[in-house]
Length: 265
Image 1: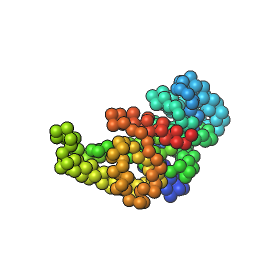
Image 2: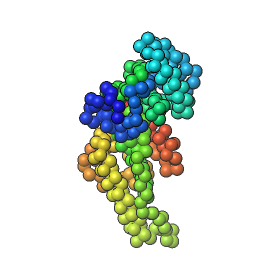
Image 3: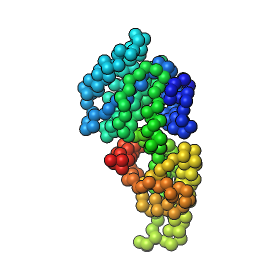
Image 4: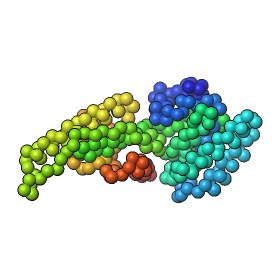
């Protein structure tokens, strides 16, 4: 890993979080373009960012050498092209890190405004570190009777972590009423599946030291999960979120990010 302000003197917890969740940053060199810039609130507009990056370039041009400007001219089009794919809204700021020779292009949504930055140097991680001290990562768990998904919420990004597929739970009725034996068997399978999810949550919280836990999914599965959680995990539950089983992972990321943003409003 390159030597830089954000990496050579890291805080003992926050920088490892960043490198764990955004591993491409490990490849960055000391010729990385770092940009912190505001996001247009209501809708994506490419013209807005063309003007914004032009303004930042002119504002900081005086401190760049000719070699630095070569990096700016190479990397800014990559940042703008990726921004056009992401079309971000709903977050006040973003950070971009671009270093084409190292295969690095990472845009990170931020939960709050910060100082605008525009640098050619090792990746500037200090502003992200400061935010993480105030808003550490959260774990989101979506449960249904037969499966579960976990997501990490870090800064304003929602990142898929694990997908658990448990024992199938059949819904069998006999004569219009559920057979008591079959109902008991179904309840035991749901309990066993949720117990496995608890073990996953415990491992993830222990590994990352999540400070908040959000639960989502069907009422029955969430209720069973909450009954099985140990006190150490119950006390970090921060709330319930809504998540539909028929949504794709990408759609869930968008839904969860929007709901978490609403909790901060």
